[in-house]
Image (tube, rainbow, N blue to C red; front, side, top):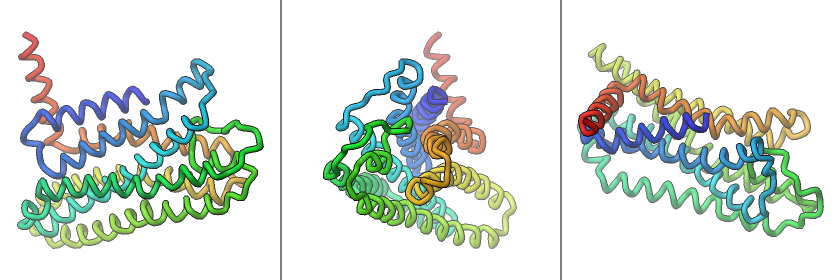
Length: 283
């Protein structure tokens, strides 16, 4: 699955970069999503595979904190990218005449900068919240990668601050993103039902359907894992935590290129054009 995620997202990024017809905000955001998927799965799966195949189960405390930071940083960044994609669809469908003036290259650059800055600001304090704890128990994490609460539960100190900070960070970043995405799609659906052209309706619904599939794949296992880790630790089996946590870092990156490649005609045509150009150049 990890290899499929790498291959699929790499091909998707190459198709978007190589085809001038795809240099539009919608596809730029899609390439950002693919890039985040590659980094998110790469921050977890190589070490997890080393654990299973090579029995390399050791990781330093600083290495664990580094992995934890990048996992959560990329998760928050991917959530912001999904919000940007929802905003793109909202502007394209609800204000099509203003699309080119709203989503300019400058605006996209500001969205990218805001995405990275927000992710860093939200996740950087978690490093110090973990470093302040006193660790005197068994230093074995029952997980395939390092998570904030997984590390905090190794401590014999009071971790209530870590629990509430993690919950607040999730609600103020991912939770807020979900609300804004939902509001965007309420307005999008209202606008779609007022379109007179059936062809325009079906085309818009196809594009939005792909985005909704990606959103559900990403948020459902991730949010269940986040809340179950904090409030259901004694009632939900440990293997369920591990399974769901691995699902949201592997399954969406693997399926996103398939969803967009199959459902988006422009991506399919761009892929065919890219590969035909490669064949011509090799002759």
